[in-house]
Length: 117
Image (cartoon, rainbow, N blue to C red; front, side):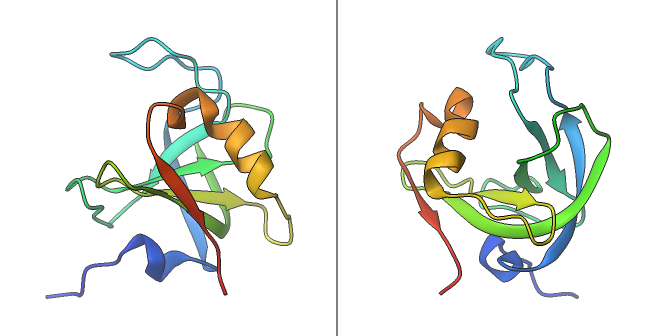
């Protein structure tokens, strides 16, 4: 049996995100449009029992997959479902940019942004 990988284990690591909601797609239940590529890290389990979700910040085209570095975690304080922030290796984004790019979905949740120390 393997140990469970948590979102904090992935902070600073290179990961591959599989998109299930590419840039420009609509949420199946709530109808909002994804303004960034959004997907999950295969073979992981988040607090909600699903795979760990990730926002991919940077690419301005819809993607199927993306390999990049986890630069931050959006830790929802009112929901058990952290979200990774994945960017091209070497790219930097500010907390403000993260807030702006993920507001379309994160505006409904209380959260903090966690970075490597």
